[in-house]
Every structure is written in structure tokens, then in C-alpha cells.
Length: 554
Image (cartoon, rainbow, N blue to C red; front, side, top):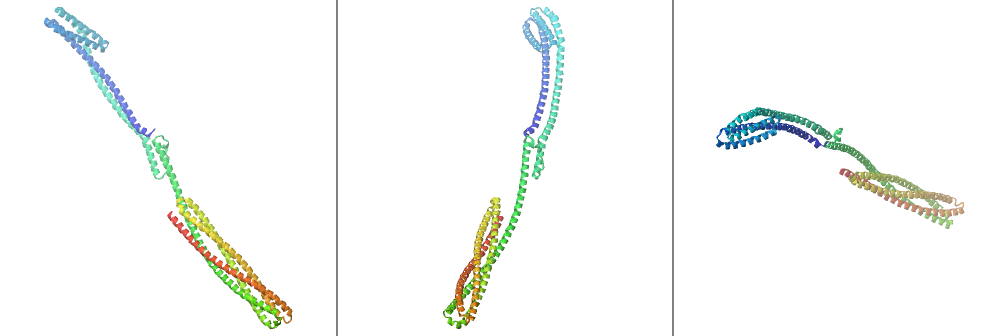
């Protein structure tokens, strides 16, 4: 049942009770009307009977007047008599229509009175007054007496009946009023009780439950049931709506709790990310510092290598000069063997000088080999640093990828973070390319240093051979007096050896020149690495700054 119907139910009940009261009143009024009609009929009958008796007596007076009045006045009396006789007959007809069987005898007696009076009238008008008078006494008086015996009790009974009916009508009125009052009181009480019951059970109690449910809903208490949700009226619709609100608010609270938990997780993740970024920045700064230190050390070693190469070039020039002089001396010996004895001392001195120079060249070549080996080890350390930079660039690229994914998840709020992540990724890519170039150049340096070491080892071997040759020359000079032919052969071999030495010295000079160039390039590479490490440090600092700004803006 709809709520409007339940609200209108008390009104309908009161209306029904009012209808019952009206019906009771109508029934009472009908009863009173019937009683009043009966009383009116009885009163009319009494009145008509009384009037009939009065008319009968007037006719009797007119009949007597016709008997005793002079003849001159009888015409008017006769006229009145006729009018009254007609009126009495009309009264009898009217009474006859409403009287019962008992009263019909009264009608007959009254008509006998009328006939007797008409007989008297006719006799009186005929001048037979005595006969008329006798007819009046014998006929009219007897008929009147017989009629009066019925008329007077009937009038008295009618009056008594009217009085009784009046009393009954009053009693009926009192009864009807009592019934209407009782019906009204009982109906109103019943209507109020039924209306209160219907209103309480159908409206007030459900509204009270709804008010309590909404109060609990306001207090975020969702542990209540809505028994009225299955109703088909407005209360059921309200209960269903409250249930929907309850479920929606409960779901909203759950989503808010999940959102708060997600925000807390995000904050923890951002804090952890900040820690990782800080660790990354610290690591990158430390790596940049170490890379700068290694670059400076590499630059220093390159300078030392360049100096050693210059010194080697100088020594090779000196060795070349010495070998040229040795070649000239050997040729001089070959051209003038006769002067060999005179030149033994000079040859011995030159041979000793050559041996000393060869020893110095060997020592310088060994030092150069050590420097080149140090350069190779430095290049290997640079390769390790480059590998570390490559790993850091890969980690940076991975962090940039993760940052891009997180920025995509964050939506509009992560656009700035995505831009920074893209820049970091670009920086990591550039760093990777730079490290690959450095690695390639370091590999070239390692290859060059390996070649330089091999050449220097050959120079050392050749210088050892030169030393052996000069020793042989000294021995040959000491033994030249015993075997001039042996001296000539040895001089020829010395000429050949000095030519080989000259060629090897030229190779050593070229190697020293290349070593100097490589050392210059390594110095340039170390400067580039130092500059790149500074750029990397600046980019990392800028990335951290923009990341902090984007987080602060978010």
C-alpha cells in the first residue's frame, strides 16, 4: 500500500465512521419521520372527526332553525344547511380514506345522521314542522346518539394516540440522539484508535526506523538492516534509497581507505625513490669524482708517457748519430786497414762509448717499456671505469624507464616527471655513446701500447746486440794484431750491424713519435672524460632538482 493511502486511511476511517453516524442519524430521522407522519395522520383524523362532529351539530342547529324559524328565513338557513351537508359529506369521504374497519361503522352512522337531517330539512321546508320536529327527535337524535357513541371515544382515542405518539416521537428523538451520540463517540474513538494504529504501524514506526537508520548512516555506522526495503510503498522506496546510500557510502569509505593506503604506499615509494635517487646521485658524484681523478691521473701518465717518448726520441737521435759515426769509422777501417793499428785506441774508445750509449738506450727503452706498460694498465683501469660508467648509464636508463612507467601511471600529475625521465634517459644514452667512444679509444691506446712495448722490446734486443757487437769490436781490436783478416771480416760485420742498428733506431724513433702522439690523444681523452664527468654531475644535479620541483608541484 502506498504511503499516501496509509496517510489517507485514517481519513477514510473517520469518513466511514461519519457515514455510519449519518446513516444512524438518517435511520433515526426516518423513524422520527414515520412517527411524525403517523402522529400527523392521527392528529388530522382527530381534527377532521372533531370538525365532522362540529359540522354535524351545526347541521342539527340548522335543521332545528328550519323547524322553528319563520318561513321567510328558511331559504338562507336551507342554503347553509346544504353547504354544510356537502362539507360534511366531503369530510366523510376524506375520513373514509384513512380510517380502518372499526371507523367505517362510524362513517355509516354519520351518513345516517346526514340522511335524517336531510329528512328533517325536507319536512321543514314542506311546512310540516311538527313532523320535521318529530323526525328530528326520533331520527336525528337517535342517529346522532349512536354516532356520538363512536365519535367521542374515537376522538378521545385519537387524542390519546396523538399524545402517545408525541411522547413516542420524543422518545424516538431522544433514542436517535443517544444512538447518534454513542455512534459518534464510539466511531470517533474507534477511528482515532484505528487511525493511530494505522499511522503508527504504517507511517510513524517505519519513519522512526528510517530516521534511526539515517542517523546511524550519518555516524558512518553501516551495520544495520533495512527490513522495510521490501515494502512496496514510499517507505520501501526510501529504505531502498537509504540502503543504496549505505552501500555507496560504505564503498566510498572503502575506496577512500584504499586511496589513503595507496597514497601512503606512494609516499613510501617516493621516499624510497628519493633515497635511491640520493644514493644514485651520491654514487654518480663519487663515480664522477673518481673518474675525474682517474682522468687527471691518466693525463699525468700521458704527460709522463709523452716526456718519455720525447726522451726516447732524443736518445734514438743520439744513438743514430753514434751509429752513423760507427758506420763511418767502420768504413774508414775498411778503406785503410793500414791505419788500423793507429786507430785501435780510438776504435776501442768509440766501442766503449757505443756500449755505454747502447746500455743507456737499453735502460731508456726499458723505462719507456715500463711507462708504456703503465699506460696500458692505466688504459685498462680507464676501461674498468668506462665499464662502471656503462653500468651506471644502464642503471640510469632503467631508472628512467621505471620513472616513465610511474609517470604514465600518475597521468597528468606525472607529465613533468616523464619529461625529466626522458631527459635522464637521453643523458644515459649520450653517456653510453661517450663511454663506447672512450672504450674504443682506450682499446686503440691499448693496441698502440702493445705495439710500442713490442717495438721497445725489439729495440732493447737490438741494443743488446749492439752492446755485444761493441764488445766483439773491442775484442777484435785487442786481437787485431793476431789476425788482420779477422779484423777485416769483423769490420764488415760491424758495418752490417751498424746499418741494422741505424734502421732499428729509425724504427724506435718512429715508435717514440707514435707513442708521443698516442699520449697526446690519451691526454685529450682524459680531458674529455673529465669534462663528460662534469656534465654528468651537472645533469644528475639538474635531474634531482627538477624531480624535487615536480614532486613539490604534485
